[in-house]
Length: 264
Length: 76
Image 1 (cartoon, rainbow over the protein chains, first blue to last red):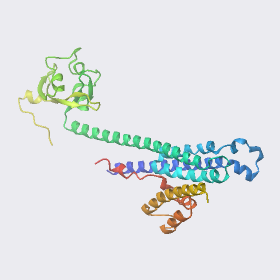
Image 2: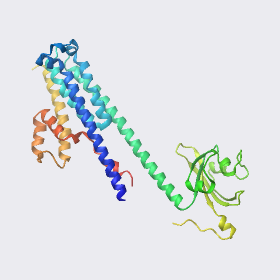
Image 3: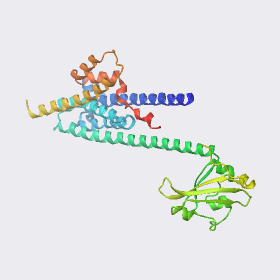
Image 4: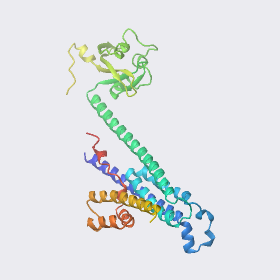
């Protein structure tokens, strides 16, 4: 338990560190964009004649577009709130030049258009982040549940096998490997029986896929007896498969004693 | 005062109050602030247009980070 807590604490610390790195990069980008946007005025103030390029005095919309980088960055790495804040700060930085210094026409319309474009782009960047975070979260949750379920099944010593309608092995657990060896073949008839074709007399795959729940005992060529329960299972891709539970009952059959049920 | 001036003022006002709303919400939810008192920050955010908000953001950079409180509660 304490190990889990410490791991979770480490993750939180590293996430915080990463967030502050993003904030630092964002701050640097904002400073750079602001200096770039007002560079013409800075040249006027400082008298750096060597840098007096006509580009810095051209229409400001081009210079303003640079602010889209921190806006999208904030949306993608920090979320909706950050992108909203950065958009407002960017517009607040641009407005004095756009409204009071610029000699170009429509000084109000162009910043308003910029706000709309920047907000939409920032929103989409934040939405992408949100969706990928949710996807990652559900993947972690699903993996945890699969691990938990596998641990339970392994604990009670039951082999689990999911077989697709084309006889392909889609899932197996460690108990199955213990009982039948490494899964080197892709089809159940090859792996379990060493055959080249489906074992039709015993196979109940088509019945199970059509909804039947079957239970039978099968004696393998090596003399081991397994109790097999098969039921339909809809796999993650929506395909109906056969979920087989295999239980070795050889020693009970040899001694003619009834096998004990799984312990709770 | 021409229409353009009024529109400029409206634009400034909308931006200022949008920023102020976001920051005041953060201020209200925050347990600790620089200087330990929230009231001066609230006044600065509301009445020192943009500059007050900028200073608040610089002093409290966590305002940019979202609360992922549900992240740790997904596993039950």
